[in-house]
Image 1: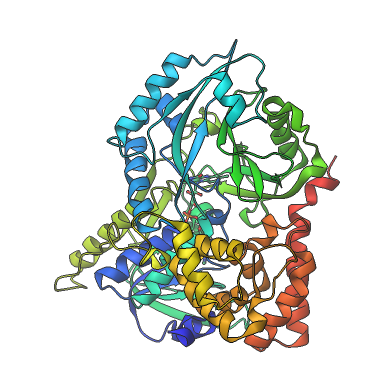
Image 2: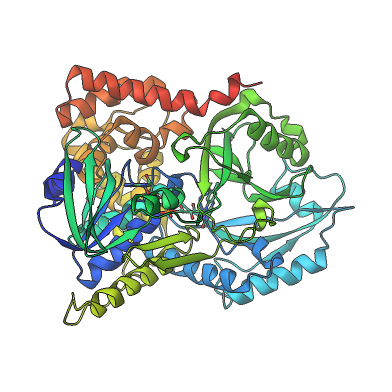
Length: 557
Ligand code: FAD
C-alpha cells in the first residue's frame, strides 16, 4: 500500500476516470463522507486545498462530547445524538477517543445551583442511556482540594464531576481518510477546486489545481459534495448565482501553557467573569490549554488567528479559576484559532446561542452542500450526506445494483484495529516497545500508541530496522524521526507544515513550536520527497510564517 498512500500518487490517480462522488473539502466531514461512501462501494475522490484537517478540523476544542451546555439551550436532540456518537467513537477509535473527567465547580454567589446541575448530569447520563464513559459523581470542597489543588478553593460549594471524551481532531480526520483510501478512495490534498464542470444545468465535477505544480485537471463526477466548512458559501459562489449566506462563522481561540505552570487532572468547566460564557481548561499530556472564545468573524478563513484581546480574555478566566498559578502572557507557548461553520439562522442570537445542528441542501444543480454540525457528530452527518447522494444518483439512474452497508458504526478506524477490549494503552505500548527492539523507551512507546493506535507497531518496526528513525525530533520529547517518514509514506503529508502541525503537533506542543527541529525535519522530508534546495527553503519559510502568524497577537496593542 505504501506507494499508493503518498500525496503524489493520489494526484496522479485523480481525474483519470469519472467517479461516483467528488467530495470538495478534506475536513472531518469530507473524510467521513469518503469513508462511508467508499465502504458502500461507490468510487470516490476527495480534493482538499490544504492538508487534511487544515481547516477547522484541527482547530477545535478536541472534545468528543454531548455538550452539557446545550442542555441549558434545550437542544436535547443534539445532545442525544452527540452522546450516542461519543459511545460509537470510543469503540471505533479507542486510542484516540479517551474518557476525560470534567469538574464543574460551583461557588457561593454563582447563578448555578448545585441541585440543578446534578439534575442536569442525571439527564446527561440518561440521554447516553447510562453508557457515559463513567458515571458522574459529586466532589466536596475537600475532595476538590485533594484532586485538583490548583483550582480556586475560596467560596467553593462543591464540584460535580462528569465524563466526556478528548480526542486528536486532526488524526481522527486522517484516520477516516486513510480508511477511505483503503477502500479505493482517491484522497488528494493540496488540490483546490477552482470551478465546477456543468452539463445541462447539472454539476458534473470540478476543475482542480495542484498547489505545487500549478497544473490543473478536470475531475468528472456523477455527484459532488460541498464539505468545505467555513468556505461553504465561497464554494456555493463557484456554482454561480447570488445566494444569501448559508453560514454565520464564529471564531474560537485556544491558548496552550506548560503543564508545570498549570497541572490539571480533570478538565475544568469555567464561566468567564465578564460574560458568563462557558470555557474549559483542559489537560493535554505535558500541556494544558484554555478555550474557547466565540466571536463573529467576517475575514478570510485562511487568515484566522488569535488576537491579543482573545489571549487576554482567556488569561482572565485562568486568573479567576486558578489564581495561584498567576498565568501571564509569557506563559502562552502556542495558540490556535478556528472558525465554526455555523448555520446563519437567527441574527438576533448571540454567538454562543447559534445552534450546532447541521443542514444538508441538495441544490437544483445537484450540488450537495452540508453546513453546521460538530466534530462529534461527523459520522452520522456523513452517513446522511451519502444517503442523499445515493438517492440522487438512483433518481437519475446513475447507479444500479445493491450497495454494501458501510458499517462505519462497527468497523474500527485504522489505528483502532486490534486494540485491546479493556482499552489498556500500556499493553499496546509494551508491544510497540518490543517491536522497536530497544529503540524506543516506555514513554515514547506510550505516546506513539496513543497517537497511532496499533499502527504504531509499523513505526516501531521501521525504527528498529533503521536506527536514524529513532532520533528524537526535540531533545527530551517523545516524537521520533520515524514519524516523519511514516507521515510522508503512509499519511499523505506533503509539506513541512503538514508534519509539524498535524502529524506530530510540535507546532502546538513544543516550547519553541518546533522551530529548533524544523530544519532537520525539512531535510528528512527533502530526501524522501526529492525536494530541491529552493523547495526546502520555501517549506521552512512557510512554516516560520505559520508560527509567526500564531504569535502575531504578541505585537498587537
Ligand atoms: P473543515 O474542517 O474546515 O474542512 C473544510 C475543508 O475544506 C478545509 O480543510 C478547507 O481547506 C477545504 N476547502 C475549502 N474550499 C476548498 C476548495 N475550493 N477546494 C478544496 N478544498 C477546499 N466540535 C466538537 O464536536 N467538539 C469540539 O470540541 C469542538 N470544538 C470546536 C472549537 C472551535 C474553536 C471550533 C471552531 C469548532 C469546534 N467544533 C467542535 C466544531 C468542529 O470542529 C467543526 O464542526 C468541524 O471540524 C467542521 O468540519 P468540516 O469538515 O465541516 O470543516
